Amino acid sequence: MAIELFNDGKHLCLMFDDLVDDTANVAVQANQFLIVDNGHGALIDPGGNMTYNGLLMAMHNYFPPKRLEYILASHADPDIIASINKWMIHADCKVVISKLWARFVPHFCSVGNAEGRIQSIPDEGMNLALGSSIIKAVPAHFMHSEGNFQFYDPISKILFSGDMGASIVPHNEADTPVTDFNAHIPTMEGFHRRYMISNKICRYWVNMVRQLDVEMIVPQHGRMFKGKKMVNEFLGWIENLPCGVDIMTQDNYRLP
Image (cartoon, rainbow, N blue to C red):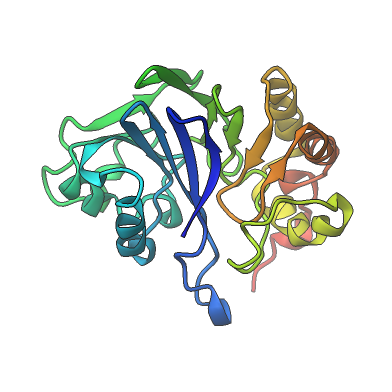
């Protein structure tokens, strides 16, 4: 079932959070997103084969999947785009992904299926036209992928942040916005310390995001940060978090 993040009658943002079997640690919970503007649709991080059938069926209630214009991929992990071949067969859409991953996407696809349908994002990011609106592909390099982008929707003021802000929670908790930031830290601290490459990169990212008008940060895993107070609490926390190479030592590089 979709969670409505924004709807003004012409512009719609939806989140699907319950399509992964995350029982007994079978797989990590993951969110998928649909943006529709004046009859034009973009799907963000559609996921793998585990999510495809459920997402396809759920989308029919809001937008015809065959009319998708874009699949927007933050990076090339399996939980992001392992199902891409099925989507490209079902819809005449383009796949938009970092230029570093554009030549890897065909490995997910049948021979020839991706030809002429992959749009590379340059390192500096870009604006994508969707209906009467745009979606900003925002640089998020090394968080955690070397070729990584987030997607900002200026109308809803939502930053779809990929792995940044992710928390490890069951799917039945993922649709609930964070209300107690300190209580939420244990669900995301371990992930960010290991998957984000360094505090330096986190600080650069925070400086960039503070130039946007963000009402909501919605990650690809777990709970969202809704409202400027909670957004700013997250930015202040990640800005000061040692992570990645900051906390590695020789002990992490010893022969087994």
